[in-house]
Length: 453
Image (tube, rainbow, N blue to C red; front, side, top):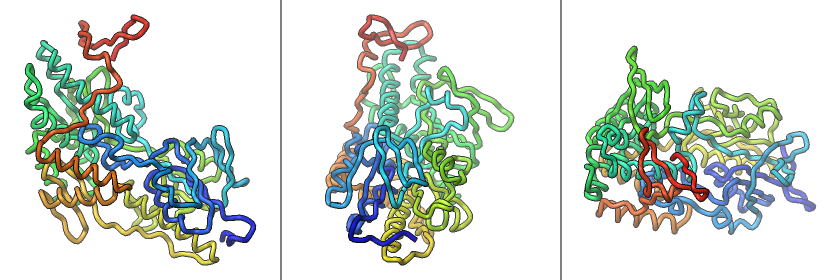
């Protein structure tokens, strides 16, 4: 039980992480007589479910991002710090930033996860994941550079490699990426090039399980696969990636091993917890699961430390049905709101029942007019599912101007089949140079040397 607020000082709540869990906790504490400090490495909240649309040129990063200070500026009890927590001391009740220490009475950790290469971190050089704005911009660069360089390539074999896109992982992110790239190649870009036919692009979606979207109902997985195939995506299930190197993806299907030559390889296959999970384990004795997530109590606290809470993707909450809750935005939102309510009740010397997640359903978009929706009591796909997906995502965007911009952008893209954010950034000189004998492109640097890209 935490102490009620006295007349001398306010209860100090420190929140680490401005994602869905941390932000919803902070928003819910806005009217509670506490002092809230939200810490994040970035100065903005990112709507991660739409990152794939940045990666494929539909939206710009600002369309799905909101400055944390702006979102929380009405919370007079809340301050935002841009910084990184490097240590936590549960005995002294303090968190350490790189050049600052903060004391807390209640601590909420919501630092999320990043992509995992299952021990093959060297693959990250060849197959970027999708968790940050920088990841999305790198994916966007690689996707559109592939078409641009294929336009100049005269060797048919090398051109095929540039027009081959491999997405590893058949969960929602992989399905959405594959569908979006297919629409780019077979519709949006079809009239934009003169030396290549973008419809000759080959998009492969690889999944190790026996079906796409494993958490969804089997019938929806089948409909998703069928919709992707109709878009032109080659879906390969029961396919394990055993190596990625030098623009070659080595796969294993049963006893058969094959290699795929592809210049663009995108990773959507796994996640691991942020490093702060290990810090919590070391400092508090908390147990971690195989992905590095913190195993929490029914009230989302750490065993033995009732004033330290872990919410969102970093938390392994298995008290509801014996399985960890999925790493999706609604889970993080509800967990953040629950912890805020629990702190409020404890200040009044009351308590709450254990956390219980209300699953309102799952949605995944496949392409134009195609999506799958599972609301539990009803499952459907097609155009109605696509409309549902659109309005649900618009609803959960944080600020009104984001909602309006995204809605208008989607409407324009729908009727014109255009994507206005197809910018190649980060390699300005790339397209001014040629190809060497190995098929590698070189860009000049300021020192008159060459750098491989």
